Structures are given as C-alpha cells and as structure tokens.
Image 1 (cartoon, rainbow, N blue to C red):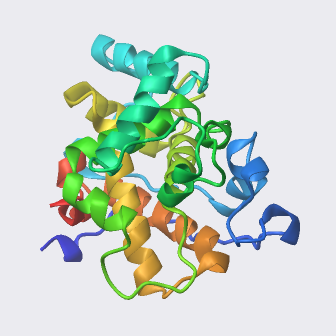
Image 2: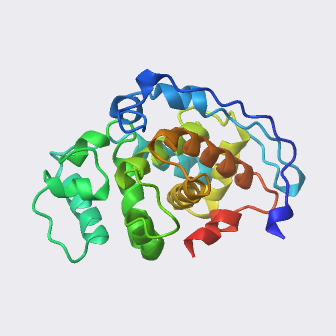
Length: 268
C-alpha cells in the first residue's frame, strides 16, 4: 500500500516561529512578505528535507539530458515573468481565471470589488502577484481548467468543517506557487537538492509537472488545514507542513510522475 512506503532517510525539520512583523492582521504572511519581494518567513520556516533516494530511481545531479535542460529553461523563463497589468495577454489570462472560477457571473472590470470574492486582498488582484509573478496566475488557471471539481470545492470552501476565518483562496494560491519555487531551488544553475533533480526527471516526461505539482500542493494544503482545524493564524504552519508532505512524497521510490504521488488522488 502507498501509505506504508518510506523514503530513504529523513532529516528532522525544525520549524521556526514567525515574528509578529511578518504577519498581516488576518494572520497570513503579509503581502510584502509573500508577494512583494523575498518572503522572510519562507526562508526561515520552510527548511529543506534532505533525503537521499534509494534504488533504481536515484538520479545524477549533473548529467541532464537535452530535454531536461530545455524544459528547465522554459520553466525558469516562466518564473521570471512578472505580472504586467498593461499587457493584453496578462489581462486576458486574468479574465480567463475569472470566467473559469465564476462562469455564470460577468466580470465588471479588472479592477473591481468582485475580486475579493475569489480571495484577493483588494479590488486589484495585480498587486498580489509581485513576488510569485505571472506563473502564479497561470497555476491558478491551470488548476481551474484541469481539475474543475476540486478547484470549485476549494474556491467555495465546500469540503469538511470550515473555520470561521478561512484562508483567502487566491492569495493562498500565490503563496503555494512561491513555496514550490523555494522548495525546488530552480534559480540555481545546477541541482543542489535531490528534490530538484526528481522534478527535472518528471519534466522530461511531462512539461506540465510543475503545474500538476501545484494542484497537488493546493489539495494537500487544504487537507492539512481541515485536519489541523486551522484558522488565519495557523496558515504559515499549514504551509510548512504542506511542503514537508510534498518533499516526502516526491522522494518515494515508485514516484516517477506527479500522478504517482499518493496525494494526487485528492484531485480525482
């Protein structure tokens, strides 16, 4: 059974308490910390799990195939694109997200109080993309189009016993993109963690690997949220435990595609 699998050996993860300055009044990391530059709390609180994977799936950190190099280059390019509200294609992607989330409700405008319904911090969602960039919008749209039922369930907080003060859906999604970017260390020229090497192998087989991993991460985060009976003030703790779960599942010996991860079943 999947539940009985174990990766090789796992280093302990020591959580670091968040300072009061890194929280906004609603308990989430502030917009400045999360989407307005290098988030201080992510760097401290989301420690890497250093596990060496065993068996035939062990990868060489340095010998990347041409396909891996190309797809890594494409992914890094996506990550370096900032959301630009003046670009027509970015505006259309934002409208596409609204239409996917609320197909029966007409959007008044790209700056509108309607966006707060989705879980943006204000009436202009473009201000929430700063640190994670355009890819965080692409991730949300991919989730909405590829897994409509679970997306709608999380958007509308339909599953489980929900907290009185729930996490804002859209901003949580931006946080998840940034968390995965930090976890995979994609800015380094060569893989410095085994997690990154595993993802490179997955990218060789499926160029949607990062987007699929995002969807799995969102489902894990919501599941952890419910299991912990969390509220605003526990969001960062839930995000840390989400990262830990992702890292462990990615390092199972029989996980060679995102679809092989045990938590992928949450999307089905």
